Image (cartoon, rainbow, N blue to C red; front, side, top):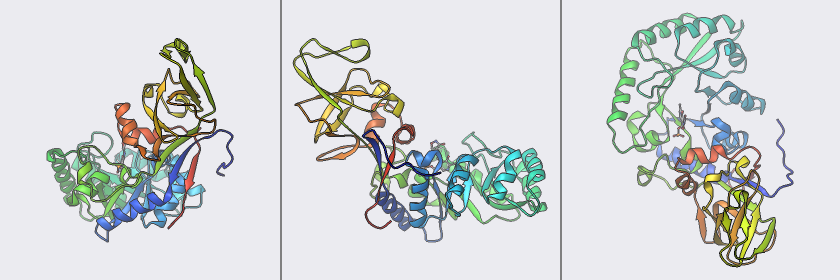
Length: 377
Ligand code: PMH
């Protein structure tokens, strides 16, 4: 898939690949040398752009890539990337052959699935699999040790499979209270003890676990949010052992400026009224870009000043109240740094009463990702 590089609207997300590289380097320094990192690049690399992100993190020394769905893995293969890829989510058994042919590892956790998949992996190929254990996340995975033992036998008896890994996922690694985390970890260790032999990759840790609990590293970690320079949760913000640089920022430029007189209105519903003479700017970004209506009132940065969004956010346009007249073409930073001000992804998440993960993921594909790469990469 060829990347589009010419755009006719001045709204873009800037992806700082140097920051991404630096975050990964720092994470690698913190982990024991023999820890393999699978970089979580699902959902278009949490909205950062999967191919550029994948290339950068691989250059920075990660071992493999983790995605949610087979389609995402195939997109990465189509770009010529040959690194190990693990599909973390469920895949149809009927599609096991496609995965095998492209050397993509799938997550397995159902006995019938394995029996069905075995029939569709073409001769001369073998499907790489990681067994998922549900130790308390309650999402996908084997919950009973008898099922695990049966899967173990099925995988080892068949030459259609290469049993590459076993893993689990924590529900609360980003919380200070470790009770549930410890319960999941013991359950996973119990599962590992049920097996006669272990596959090459054993993994449980996400960013929070890898950086704050070294007891769940085994030999592999799946790192997502931290490499994007974001913190897994507010609770553990101060515990993270490295300085994160946010990779994602969002910018646009003013396309129109006008002076409203007291009493004049702005936007759908005409529910913002100028209380005095006011300079109002229009920026070309709206809820169809993921810049959703609930962001009304949020302050963005124009010419180094914090300016509020006024009126209802439209599908493609948003209005700002300026402290003074600004020229058309003035850059507006919605997320990121401009002069002395910084809007973090967390600031937007707070305004929307959600988590930072959701913010970068929901800036839609209509917003081009522009890659900044100056130094090391
Ligand atoms: N492994 C699995 C199975 C995951 O689902 C995720 C993130 C990660 C690793 C990476 O976690 P991190 O970004 O905290 O490092 N998955 C999700 C999710 O499904 N919803 O939010 C994050």
